[in-house]
Amino acid sequence: MFLERWLEEVVATSGITGITNLAEARRVLLDDALRAAPIVGRVLGPVIDVGSGGGTPGIPLATTFPERVFTLLEAERRKCDFLEHASADLANVGVVWGRAEEQSPDQYGIALAKALAKPPVAAELCLPLVRPGGVAILWVGESADRTRVAQVATLLGAALEADHDGLLVLRKVGPTPAGFPRRAGMAKKRPLP
Image 1 (cartoon, one colour):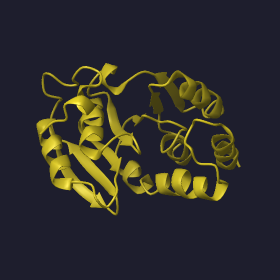
Image 2 (cartoon, one colour; image 1 turned 60 degrees about the vertical axis):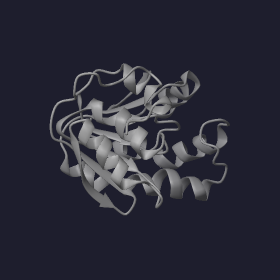
Image 3 (cartoon, one colour; image 1 turned 90 degrees about the vertical axis):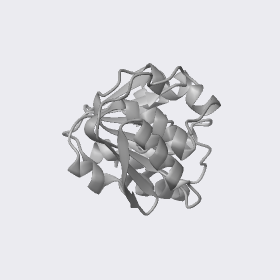
Image 4 (cartoon, helix red, strand yellow; image 1 turned 30 degrees about the horizontal axis):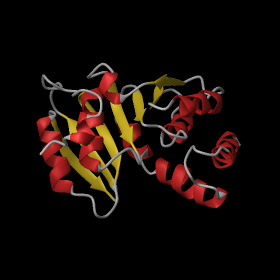
């Protein structure tokens, strides 16, 4: 019931996702987000949804794992206002208005990125947030350059652990190297090699 109400609000609120059809919202925002549940269930620690937008994948996963702490990170104030309203009934969810580059490194067990940026950029934005032993989970399309994502992961103290049908799992094997995260916007302006 909660998730249905959330989906209806996402569809009804202009400028949140661009999705205007409830069936499409259910498929793209809910079902696709929940594909990561088996991975989230195996990794300990708090979870951050980077560039949460309308709340996916964070809100569906937070309802699946009510014992876990979830942070919805969003750079746009208007979307943060929506997220605060949408997640008000979820005691395990907090909303942060800010950018990934401004957050403290090595704090989370899991960082999630769905429709955040191109996969190598999403990896650079997420991996500094993850502590050693944790994972970044990236939703990617078929054309994603997995070799390049793996190279970025290596630069950031991580390794490409698995590719689960469009979910890339990057395991953090060491602390975030000095110099990361880079200044806000640099990951997109000057992507890592």
